[in-house]
Length: 417
Image (cartoon, rainbow, N blue to C red):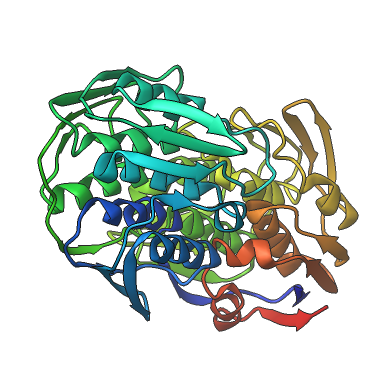
């Protein structure tokens, strides 16, 4: 396995360009199942999760050409409506092919998904939505087996907002007969991007980005071209890296309103920055003030940035409190940060972070995607050398991270363990 060696204490300066969104690309890729025509996508990041989804599409029926963020997807030969365990086990987003297969072929056999071990992430709301549309769901030997003779629009009311559930039901509904209404829908930008992509192929979706989405079923989707939005979590990560370092970092090619909750919290911590149309300039070097952070569904503070802001707050002048409301097991980075000299105590879903003057390099281990990022941020500002093991987690969600950081003046080396 690969590891990072990070020589800390180097000032970050320069421009970092944000890649396409992982969490928007994956459902958009799954949605290409809904059309037999050619689809051309741009700004698709080169990540292990994306490669897994492409393997899954190839296994189902698609022919794929991918180079430098540009992707051409064509219809292949015989369709296989099965998503096998050996592909699905590594990535939770694989379950998104379920809605597309139901919508297009009225049949699917999809293994229960894997992914980061950050807590229980049941798909009961997804299945509830499909059943409302007339789909018969069975569980057989670890697989979700779905079948329907005639897919009908329905009123789907989620018990709580679910990003994957909203995406899955939306994909099933675009080719269903009649109108589907999704209430208590998730409002993340990735939902809006999926709806925009589907509409560009001829779907009729209104209200994406609000709690109420209306979908008028159509008989067929055509092909088309589409550019994926920038990755807001990657943007927030580099923004916080700049805030923690002593230099001026320009986070370029993002949509600033997508990280508004992060910007507000970092401003509350006393960090100086400037927001422009498609970039944010952050002026690092100050010790942050302590703040209170509570993760919420979008537009609240994202759970996917909780670990990164915790790294920043380990250096605050005072005590910060972080409450994780989304996932029950998302503080696995705490022990590793404490190994680097942080002072963090956790009780249930609350972390109390007592700021220290400096962190010190140490051997640490990544436990999930965003925890990995928090350890990288800590390593960048720590005294000495930090070794981060199991960085395959990072490769799932950050494109060429060591190259981007080194271009800013960091010293990050990828090694084989």
